Image (cartoon, rainbow, N blue to C red; front, side, top):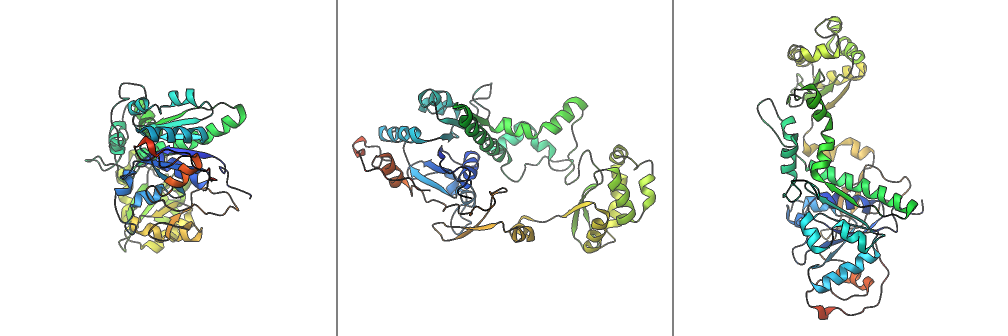
Length: 401
């Protein structure tokens, strides 16, 4: 192919942490030029989350390959002038500062749409720009609690949070897809639609299934660890050699094969306590006990062989330290080399990438690495400084990815 799908698209992002950086990294992966505005000296605070990747933050490495980093104080006269010049040339502008701060700084979608009618403006906030919680501070953990997600995780006694920033990731995904839709809409109609997304709305969408289940059923799903509130047998079982296997029997056809080929107890499939989806859920404790007792007599290799024969879905219960060694990542060629200030790093291909395109995603930027280059492209000198006198015309330079 001649180029990536978003080649020629310029994205300017006043971003930090996870949600917007997750969206813009995906845009960068698909060929967009992403100019990341960072605070002078401190930068995106995700740079300091940890130092596990040879001194770099694992979160920052994940979220920021292929971007250009510029240091810009947008509250200074020079910084405002540079931001305005960027917005004149951008196709998309995204931020994740609070709605009130965005209005004060004049970067909310309504204000920018009036000034730059061709600019796709967008933001990620905690609760959105309207409603009683619009100005409430929000982070991933807090949104997990506010939406009730934690009440679905853990065991019978304890709530548990999801171990990744699921609210941020959900919002980042909707921002990414929203921007793609807005770019397509603008190409057809000339109209630039805003893309304002909230963590709360995004995670609530993901929780619609259990929310409707509770709203119309009157009873919330039980917290069941690795089990499922509405499917049985489903979850983790320990084998004779101390391994854990996850299995999911989704329908009556699979249940019959599971009884015959795995448990070697065909009579269970016709037992009135277990012969339908609802009856298996109603008698879950007895059923799980039968399955656990049988699995505990077999080693993992035998269980896997029987499950394959029965065409019943299963998986190993791995730990996170096993993931980067996973044979599926190697077998599908998912690892690519990404340059950084500490040398080449292994990072993952996105879940979808255009066939035939070269996966050259660009380096992970140091703080302010591209400030001079971008400001020269804009015809400005170092606008990251507060002194207005630092602004002077400079020769235009061609943009680089």
